[in-house]
Length: 155
Image 1 (cartoon, rainbow, N blue to C red):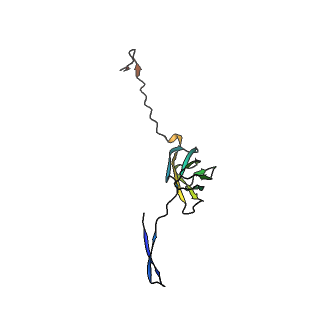
Image 2 (image 1 turned 120 degrees about the horizontal axis):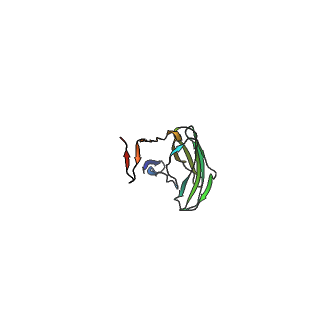
Image 3 (image 1 turned 30 degrees about the horizontal axis):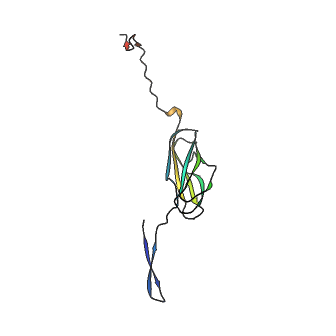
């Protein structure tokens, strides 16, 4: 982490008092990204995000789904909860893929017990159609199965 040191002056005593600011530790820990891979257009994908409480006291959280790109409908039922010290909680969410291409949404995580900056989990997926998958079929019309199980070709 980065330390910022700023001298403060006590004018009555003519002293410099150092002030050290340390980066704020996040007690609720979440993954920065969840990749749901390739999905078909119109499909609804169920997934989970795990929230871990790294503090020594119980924490209360709030989750807010935020759609980041057009075509990403991100929903969740259980948006608040409490996590005991050192514990974790798994929260389910769904994403409906309504547009072709790379889409993304965000889940905002807010610690209600120790307010600070919000954290974000980016949820990504690549949306295609069932017809966009590449299939290769090779046909050999003159290929016959011989009695010994080996293929033969009539010339």
